Length: 507
Image (tube, rainbow, N blue to C red):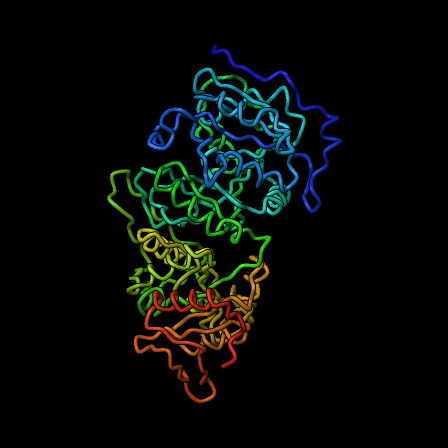
């Protein structure tokens, strides 16, 4: 067995009692652990082999310090930093943590123990119920109170932070059910057998102390394979979804991008403690081309027994295959991904809202609609764009008709142009209505935006900045602005933001 070094000073119960968590925090029963022991070979052009990767200065401060400051403001004052390659540079800079108003201990790996092996050495000092675990190259500005509250209100032993990003094709992705229970992890680099949700494992975790307690040996272990997968199989891992700022800074290109976004205040703007600017979008004619869903004649909710599930293709399968029952004919509109990517980079939330009467009328089921949404996320992700959330109403326009799926009968106020879906998103993401927009290609979207108090943009190939009414008869409404495509709409929004014209659409 390899020898390992642990600093002699201990985290005492007296320290916990004398350092209560900051006001507004959920509980003081947490310790933060930062994995900072890797060699960082991908960053050698920046480190020159002289400093460990987490000590690279990002706008004047080590990456580790940015992480600790974000954690500290949510009341966590106890830190353990796992160090290895050039770890003395970390200790020289941070010492015992008193300069930052925290207490730091160190676990020093004499040989690499993987992403979980060094957690064994937490056992003798772990006097709290929960461990916040962060990887040292993840930059973030997250309302951790929300994540802790989520963790404490769910029955699992582990919570993973999940978020969409601009490169899901080379990221570890989470598969989650409608309870946010993680049912699987799709590793990066492995062929994916179906369309997938842009739901990335971000490298921030909350572990119950007994998870650490079951690590019985100081040996090389992989966090996902050796710790998480057995817990996933037992339904004890949950995913906390957030659109906040979390990015891997582990390559030079990503590091420079993260640095630029910190200078532009994108990090802090995305924290859900702050009011968020949001662009709500419809899909057909705005993000994707107008196309109808084509389904089989089967209506699963009318059958006594559900049909057989599709068997997974073999590992050699060369790409996502359509499931029987629904042909997903979906293509992006030109400039749609570019417009969404521009809004992503500027720090706007981008949320898809759509009516899906097909789910109530028998054309398709909820799972088929979700597969369509997953395909949409894959197509956007291939061009570096993502949606922060998706909401849809399955209610049939003429409620109570014979064709309506009884499961959808109780949904009445969520269908556009009613603003109920928007109101739920406003509450969920702390959205500033005065700085937010509804963009779409029909009078229905424009009316929806007006009903919610948003500014409105009509997306039309004939678009110009001379607004005109859309719709007919009693449904005729005038948009606040017009644009030819989503990229043009994004530039219009960013000009408005820069000019500070945040007032609601008055037209």
